Image (cartoon, rainbow over all chains, first blue to last red; front, side, top):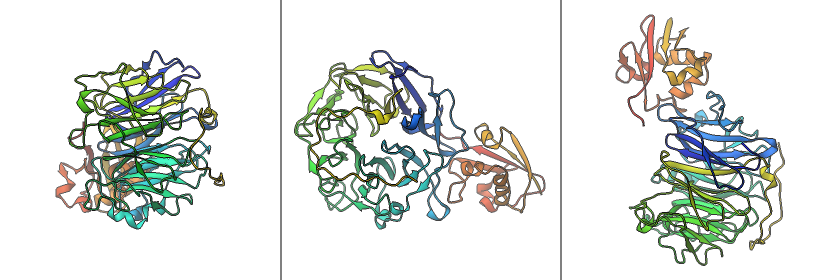
Length: 390
Length: 93
């Protein structure tokens, strides 16, 4: 793997694939299947502290879910017996699936995993051992969370880039929860988010949030793709406002923010919850460059007929090169990429198993060396607080 | 009491690559024998049982030719020199 190249981590229902390219991102080499036969719903790259470590959540249909890691870009994977994500005996529940692996860039050791049944796990030693975040697991709301279509999962983790005690998570269906004390206590943060499927359309919690996205330089601005509804928050999740201004559908899963433009957000709308394919069978990424006030379709290089495609909640990613790379993978096993922020797209891989997640890693530079954004944050400034490192 | 576990290919890495594991069980039931197996290979049991102590939904355990689902589950008594098969169910994709 060349330095300063890009590697896509592609999780599928039959294993993982690694697609690598130079910084130009014009030609891609796709690996043989990794962790073959396992469902891989979550992947992540840890480039902190000199590591070049790929993480994958590998689920055996028969024998459950384990975390695996590779320090040599998939040549070898960590031993399977290091299955360290496990509910404590007194929790009364069993791990079904690992949905998300989050690696905060402002700490060298901290990691999080979101799992099904909905819970958050934390590691303070770069993934060697894990513990259940009891503050969320013991939350009184938990008994009233209901499984969404994919199960009762904690699928999104947004560690605050400035304040290590502050984390947002999203649960289907529980909604958004936030801690400001490092996970000890949590509050639901769903004001303004609609729950189409409940008699009370604006409950305190119970929404089916599909994805939240945040730019590291604007931590108070959050974007949210709901099960029906597109929202943004300018107060760190305390309240949410509709931003579905000119999209063909406000149903969808995937959502990412441009790595250098905090106001630029990308989504991939689907027709409806009953027909989870792109509207009019046209594969269109929608981009807003003004924080959701208006949207434009990005179509160059994408099929505009007979494209009955679906992109899942973790199926879209960005790298942080300049110009930025934007990528997405479909349930029909195609990976598309754009090396110019979405202006044009190319097919990177086709014929893969159904894609569950796509993550992008810039190899050869520490993730903490990420370039600063081009535009200043519109979000409210907050004092920086660091959690003492243990 | 001696018991022999026969493991599927997938589980062998958890048991040092062995196809069969012979051990002395501390008690008369399959649950006792699984605990004895876990003493030797601690992570192996996590693949067979969930954290709540139930046999995973798509894993079958046979004592001789009988599935323990029909003989008392984890309380199934073991005969002398039992042969226990741990088998992935015919399911998956």
